[in-house]
Image 1 (cartoon, rainbow, N blue to C red):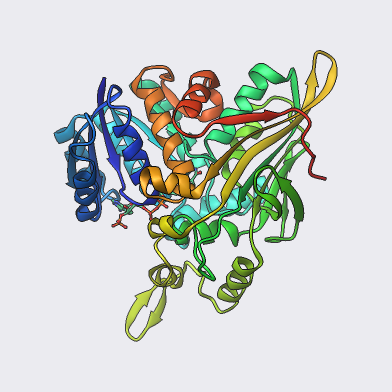
Image 2: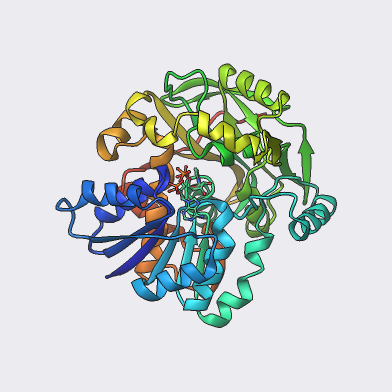
Length: 419
Ligand code: NDP
């Protein structure tokens, strides 16, 4: 059917690439391009001969729009899949606009340098006006809406699991299960154990920035911000058991608050073990989570980037991670005049993922929906010019592919609710 250019070849991208290769009728050709070309070549070597998809590799610095345009002009893809880091979202969107190609990613924009004055001015204004202080938000990418519309191009934002699948669950609940959704609790439970005292399941820098930030939720038309990790609940997850979970700010709350009419409250909870929290607190207290460069023996280093170099690469956790994830959305609302609840969720087994693609379940649960989002665009099912998040499209073909491609979902119509 067509050709995709995939930017990035880390934990999530390697799963998405392998999944593209399992769907060669859609992904006839892929080009894997990243900063470190040797990783792309190693994956190509692993896959060549086992798939009908033709694979090429390239080196690219995705922070550089001209370099990206040169690559896009050479490869001539139907779609650019950005599975690098959120830092590259805007440069890749710029390049897609310049070259006339559809775009997708798995996480919304955040800047690498949070001291950059132009970004900081917008950030400070947003903190004051909207009331949440995470470094990432949709405003930067939503600002491209008109440009994509005028160019007749589609940009799909945030097609991982959360964001991504969680919004497809919301769109599905709205289309099929409820006349009105009152509350949404997004629960992200990782019951897996990798055996290390401390490691992150995806890019450590992005992950630690996210979880060390103040939490926030949407209630009655506005944001409520709370100190990091200050709201804790215990929940008994199907196939995982009881886990402590903490309220975090999360990007899909921002788009769902716009796109789910009349919703009164949206919260996001993620499970953490005590060892993770103790390490994170200690690292934060000594300044190791700082994103601001410091002088060290004549060079500038960013503490969190130095920490990343010390921590296990999430892509290497696959063989040692056992247990399951359970991620989903609990809805309350009304159907046919009656109050109703539902939990739509997926359970994924770390070792099953490892057997299939050599990765743990966090990369898997993100990489599979990245491929499915791309499939929606490549097959024309989700093409509408502009910039959109997952819940703005028809959920049915996406939900169907989740069942076919390794992330089957279930509905519990009488779940325990979170107080
Ligand atoms: P990794 O750090 O494992 O991989 C990132 C990849 O991007 C690496 O191949 C890296 O190259 C490449 N890269 C980084 N900077 C550049 C650049 N300037 N030019 C070209 N390539 C670059 O990250 P993950 O795979 O863990 O995460 C990928 C994305 O998925 C992130 O945006 C993350 O936020 C998102 N994510 C989304 C989730 C969701 O549910 N929606 C959940 C988890 C992650 P190199 O090899 O040289 O480092």
